Image 1 (cartoon, one colour):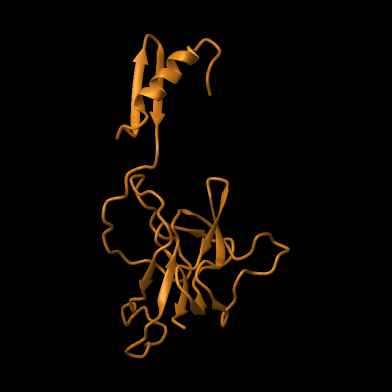
Image 2 (tube, rainbow, N blue to C red):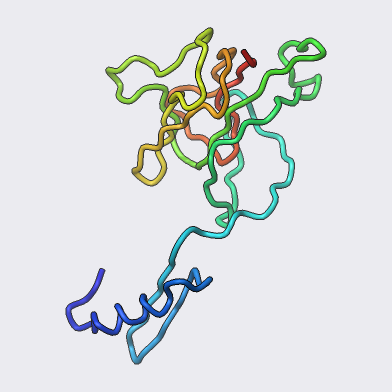
Amino acid sequence: MIRSDMDVEKLKAILEALQGTDVTRLTWHEGTETLDLRLGHPPPPPPATVHAVPLHGGPAPMPSSAQMPTPPSVAPVQAPPASAAPAARPAGDKSFTVNSPFVGTFYRSASPDSPVFVDVGTVVKKGQVLCIVEAMKLMNEIEAEQPGRLMEVLVQNGSPVEYGEPLFRLEPV
């Protein structure tokens, strides 16, 4: 928000000076005024460390504030430890997951009265909307990165999800 006593021309000059540079953040102090600018896209998050992610229910650890949203990722599903696995999957299983690109709330449909985007058994095309993850009051459609048949929905509708948490398990078609 720009206050009425702030010099708008000075602000425009600062923004123009930053155009075309690699500067993504600037904090400027003048007298009692402080200006904190963040420009462009944030830098990519550091490489993630491998950690266990609960597939069904239970709270999941929150990511650090350094992690920023990235496009949905598609990764091979790793079998959980034998003590946590409900049933062993056959060797050579080529299924993959679609993971949450945000910390937010998972919704299977556009509104409570709307049908779900996809259901178990549905064959999805690349780019097809699978769900919505609400993050900071923004509804973000999560699309399939590759075609596949939906084998399992891993999160309950209306549940909180964390960054990188598997949402769906699909098999290639």
